[in-house]
Length: 403
Image 1: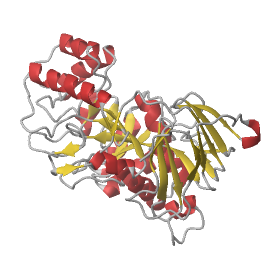
Image 2: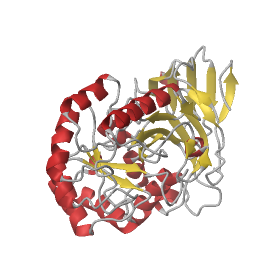
Image 3: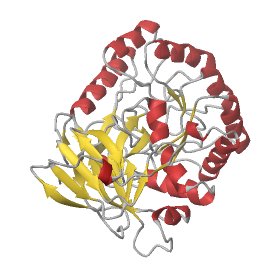
């Protein structure tokens, strides 16, 4: 388990010979470029190699004609402490997800902590502690944005102010605690928004003891920033009610792995029909009763592409640039100034798809050949995906951290 911190520096990194560059930008998903230059963890140039300054690089990566994509973002996880989940008694689940191309995770509440405090002082203390801990510790190098308090009855605006001043920027899923009514939730959502805290609401039937049904009317009245697991976690609302949410709300449409697959497809199709595909973001909602899913985001991309006939390059945007923009993150897009969180992929060996995008459109997972976070190589060929046909190589390295 890698103890990665935010203090490491990549120096100058040159990534050359990229065969397909996915931008993460749903309005321009494929870039006409084959080279990326990174300086101290930030993208400094995205061009054809002849137009880039590739001199004096600390690290040179030959992509060997493979695909370069922004690191995947899991918009909905339930971490606890470190790289451990008590829900399944597993260690290393975050590092394993990095081998599935995930470079950023966003907490929807640290709800699986044994004995989780539900009094107001305790829930604030847990949120602040989780925020601090994951700010200091990156399992496998993954950026975990944690510290998402589950709101309870009795909270007042000053509680949200205190949380915000302490560095908390997220609310846990509304509905996992005692606040389940639309009017009460709407008041707290407004308090959170006023103090710069983003909110997510549970959608659908109960997922853990203590949670309950959150129906479409509560979701619409609460008006949280993210319609959390719109396809249920695990039990979904009807497809008609989910499509109504897509139509009547302007908020982010979060589709998760640990939900109802049929309703997931209905939500994605509704977003396309309503001409708002930029609202679709992806999560796993793991760890959960069904386990942890290191390849959950890749599986969602392949499922939506193959079953909903969404071009694979668009489906990858759901897991990258869309989430980055909804969540106001500095990653998720291959563009100058963004964090150099990148995943190198190629078509899996022996897939019938002739290209990576075609294979994903047929429902096959790509093979991950390398993951880079802040310009630092965090893994080579993935231990979890099917083997990629080609993998990138570090052809020059002067003191670069890799494992």
